[in-house]
Image 1 (tube, rainbow, N blue to C red):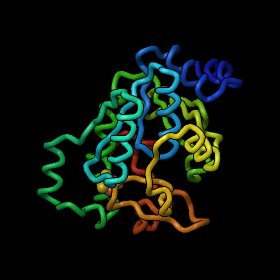
Image 2: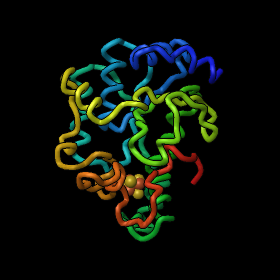
Image 3: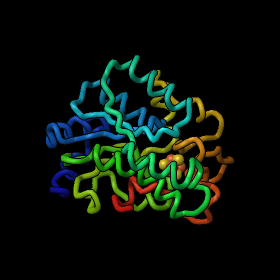
Length: 233
Ligand code: SF4
């Protein structure tokens, strides 16, 4: 199946890949957006060509105000429902009661616990019952992501994963957004290239790794929250 998907999409445009995936995985394809620039390209393609792929977002409760503004702009421009998944109330209340609102600064374990409750668990619910997961991952975003593929099988989630913009450069992304007048996060003009939760994201300097601004206080190179790694805590 994987080889067949790769072969069938090799000469297709990104929008054609999305349409093909929507057809092959009818009703079982889902696109997760964090409203980053890459995700905005895919959202635009899905809406512009009315491709039947469900768009979902994870609201961790700690996102930037600017990110919520993009979400609102998307709703108004495309008039398409975006299904939003939020953290489990009980888990979140327990975390906040036991460890407070900034536990993630104290240790990597705490940070991963927060990411699990606020991001990974809601994502698991969003992907449940689906067969294909569309993302805005690009190869140059990090060393870990350069080992992925445009179309792959995700063993962790037991589903196909499609990254239509995998080979795109940042300039391609910005060109698409400007040409098609797609709304995007104003933080991108302030040095934020990978935008997650507000307390855990900062701007990066020119030449720094794309994900250097995420969990900058951690002295490691992983820089993933678990969404594209494993569904386990
Ligand atoms: S990025 Fe930070 S605030 Fe957001 S879920 Fe992870 S640890 Fe929690």
